[in-house]
Image 1 (spheres, rainbow, N blue to C red):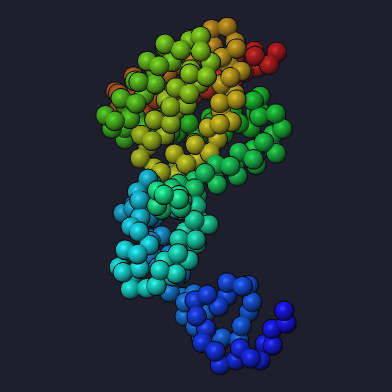
Image 2 (tube, helix red, strand yellow):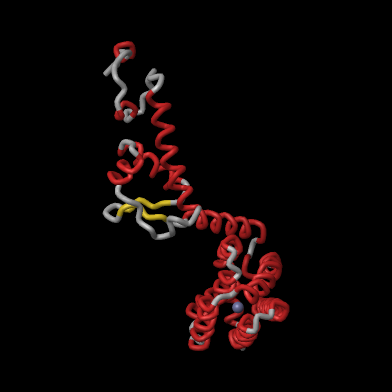
Length: 259
Ligand SMILES: [Zn+2]
């Protein structure tokens, strides 16, 4: 079918006018609607970044948001698409729109991929060990200064699970990750936690090698206990040293596993 374009001049440009993928000569309406839904998206984004809306929170319905913002439901829908593309919300059929941490996930994937490309075989990578040494010694020191009872309890629990999982590699490594994540959490610095999480699955591969080494998990646990003691004593310098010793042990066990 041939559409005579000139016949559309002067027709009202409704919300559905662009749905066919055609560009029209509508001079004002699209510009205004872009501004409206972008402003809706920006307001919701700010509430997420300010922490007023948290991961897992469900946003009000499209209708409720349209009423609150005094905009059309189409504008709300478009705003949600922007937020979803940024990885801030997830639109789940039947469950509504949920605030998610997709930005962090994207960063984790990017850093993980970058490290894989740079270092080839990640498990025995010197780069990875160096990053851990820089990041985690200071994490331990900050954790000793800032940890709350919540993170200390999480570290204790992780050590308990590792004790019970000395012959279960996957369970041990998951708990090992939890221990190091609780330390990062204890810094009370969200960016540090994100950085650590972004290399955590790479650390898992490294930990798998250590688990294979005779006595590796037991040695690791000795260091975990020492780190926790320093955190409980509120002793940043000792916590930093204890983490340094743990990572030295990791390095030695990794090279023993590789050899
Ligand atoms: Zn460890």
